[in-house]
Amino acid sequence: MKATSAAISLNVPDVGASARFATGHLGFTEAMAADGFVSLEHPTAGVNVIFLRTGLTTFKPQEIAGTAGQGTLLVLVVDDLDAEFERICAAGARVVTPPETEPWGERYCQFADDNGLVWQLVQWVTTPQ
Image (cartoon, rainbow, N blue to C red; front, side, top):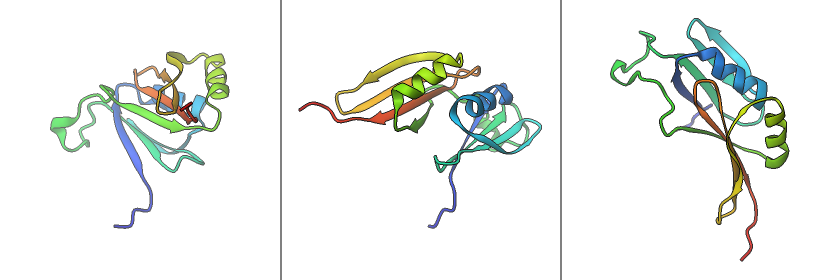
């Protein structure tokens, strides 16, 4: 299989709220939009994020058309986690988890958008042996 691009699509109650968070804090731009739908792209991440308004009749399969979010993390790997954390905090984003470093070298922080989706930034760091 040869894939030419990748995207993740999430159902949310307020498409605009998640889109504003991603464009305002994380560098995504709008690729296309319609009523109840927005597709965002990122100049360096290599993945698009699509938000669909919960309840759209065009969503298939209809039996799984609930709201996204339960256990979902939208993760972006960055070069300078602490600088990004400070920048996003200063812009007023809601912090879920301040920067922490796991024993295996994953340094991360988390923010929530107005739909409750959790956006996680990760920086891989070396750990002491």
